[in-house]
Length: 129
Image 1: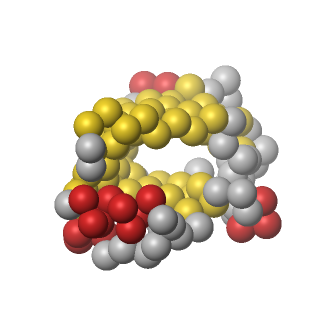
Image 2 (image 1 turned 120 degrees about the horizontal axis):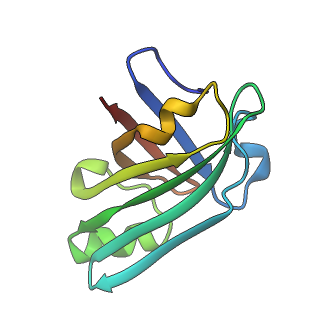
């Protein structure tokens, strides 16, 4: 899978409104939702359609939380780059694919830490086996 460094780590990049910034190995996200449930706590519930290196498609759903101090959350909301040590952003991941080559994803749960950049969300994710 694109971005894997050989140790079960998958790096997924989602660049908002920047089609030329999305790596060729991934399709644009089909849907992404961030619902603010409590002040300074965001509940993450996103869906992505990934195009893998060989053209196979995989559906990815992430769920988790992002929270931090009010000034940190406000800076993130304004699109500012914020040191990721100043906020919590963790997700679980579930995959679906019809590809036999990547069928193992259908039986895999992923966990990850994320960084919110001004122009992207970057996940550092690991498969639980």
